[in-house]
Image (cartoon, rainbow over all chains, first blue to last red):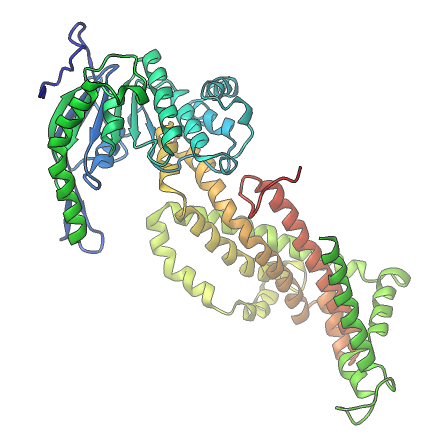
Length: 282
Length: 267
């Protein structure tokens, strides 16, 4: 089985990639507020890097600290130890070069779809925010829904608004926390294909968190497996050498996909079972 | 909806008819009072009550001055109390240190029966409008304050994190995230607080004043004129309803983004 532990993905060796995002020896320990003696280490000594234009997925059992890692990369959470470098510079505060797509509802309910997409541009003091936001709303297929409030949109539409809201700012790094996990299978595959098309066009560095191995393989250049929590850490790294452009539905039927799936699942299975046992015991 | 209004009107008419039947001397035999004038003395007679209202508004035109005073007091108390509540709510919710220090004092002030402050306010601010506004403000402030405080605390952490990732500064977070979230909570409290502003104004007038609807009621009570007292209460109720409707109208305009219970359009 082709298990690559090198950080350089296959297929990217033809041109050198600069590192967009680099997590170095990240440890996050949370102290309980009512009992500071009780500590919980979510992730321990995690090192992870994403090249410019590279699509990296992190998979792991539930509760293994995947979102914690993403929050550290976003600068929303300061790690207990370790450091984050963004394009070679040490990250302090919010990661200004990154866009973040959250797992749960993140739109402002008091703003229309258009106003939500425009809000980042407004924060930055852009003059033509409304026009640019409308352009992106059309690109995600919601040009006719500009004046709708989030509660008037379906779950899939809200995700598309979120995507436009993040991409309109043209970030160099995209952080995505199970962004499509709440969607039904069909909508999800549409969104995944849309994401791949937008990514192929702009070649952004993507750090994609998911618990769905199929999704991770279908989208990524590289898949990183985390162990079960507490103190989870990477236990395997796999280069995904499926040809691009891919269709997420069709690629799942190819022999290479099945081969990769089997190899990664062999590593992941024990951890998923361990995570499940811990949740049962708790 | 049309039928609902008709039924509501019918209920109102029925109440007045029963009131009329039970209080008009000689209309129905006495079963509680010995004298058939006593019911009218204690509960008033609707016809005379309406005659009084008619005289105030149409023939003598002498209620407008009092009504204007009461309404000005109410609106001022409502506006000042809401603004202070919003400001303090935002401030104490966003600065944990100040919030922690103020917490026991806020709780103490809130649990204090503030109506008893009315005589003190009369002493401080005189018998004019200011003392009634002050009383109304103490009633309105806490309602709005607690709702705004709660509203800020309940801001979705994901929406907040998202706004920060989209590049919001502290000022922009306040303006675009905390304030809209807090106002949605504030509006749910405005119906209560507009009523309390009214209570503050009337109780203040009742306890010491020379103008206002509360003053009219006090005067009538002194003369055992139950019909005028009832007329005053009716007028106050009607205006409280009107104020409440005005708040509801503003709320519907500003809170368009909130999901209604059922929202399908009939084609």
